[in-house]
Amino acid sequence: MGDFKRYSRQMLFSPIGEEGQNQFSQSSALIVGMGALGTAIANHLVRAGFGYVRIVDRDYVEQSNLQRQMLFDEEDVAASLPKTVAAKKKLEKMNSSVTIDAVTADVNAGNIMDLLDGIDFVMDGTDNFSTRFLLNDACFKENIPFVYGGAVSSRGMTALFVPEETPCLRCFIQSGEGSSGETCDTIGVISPIVDMIASYQVTEIMKYVSGAHDQLHRSLLTMDIWNNHRYAMKFSTPKEGCPTCQKREYPALQGGGRQEVTSLCGRETIQIHLEPQFDLQKWATKLEKTTTVKKTPFLLRVQLEEGERLVLFPDGRVLIQGTEDSGRAKALYARYIGM
Image 1: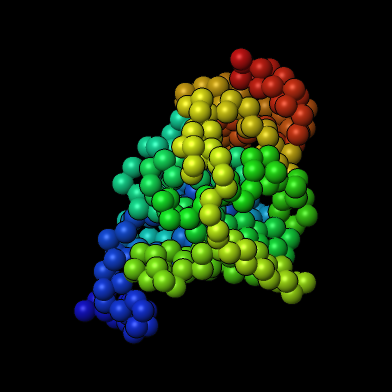
Image 2: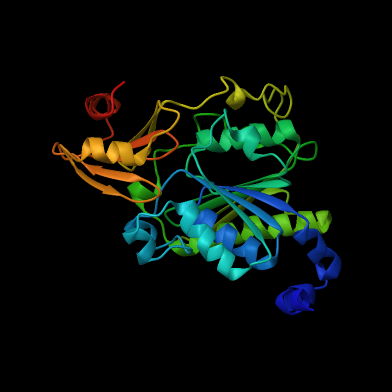
């Protein structure tokens, strides 16, 4: 009876009904990225009663996130909470019957298969095409539906890719061609386009999970809500020679490990991941002799006299904030952490 009251309006929608609701409760989702899209997606999935939701993100909450990332507030910023930790707290208050698995990590070829374990579908909440291609390849290798989404400025794109049924992301966007250098941090974004793309993503997976496959959009949908443009590129046959869905080579999975040095586009931040883990208390004691240190249970923030900032995470990652020069970032890392 409790479930009926919670989901009554959703179950009264005849394409879902009791049977569809049961399917939701037995489904497991992986959301990669807990930024604007990811938080909106998680909000919808958890409120709708999807039984298990695994959320993954490598970052922590900052003030500039609050304009569009709906699960965060000023207290999360003040506490420098990892996005997954802050999101899990909010989501569990929304619906205690949903299992929320929060993972603070950088998604890469070395851990994506573990993150996919037990997962029925993957939702794209990322902000870069290298990770999207990784998700695309991993999903097609494991025969898992992948719901692509992206939003910047007033523009957005989304599509549901289903192995053995549809083309894949690489059939539409070639590796290296998808990024124009425009990100939310360089040209901005308005929150309504985020909500619209996330809503399309969740609606498509609701159709898929509930069995309404004849109602699937089956297209790459693009829109600009400020300039009143909308276009749906209908799916056709997969691109001949596609390395993912045709040749089954899965290029993004090659190499099998993380990127040691990664530029977080548009954010004046370089991520360096050389260590397997950090003892935050040990490093706080070491670095506070020459720097200004703020420690939380989840990370260590270090203000350098040179002007840049270091953020250390327990999983061995360091963000060097205040530079886009990888050489400069490596030099600072070597100076304070050691290489």
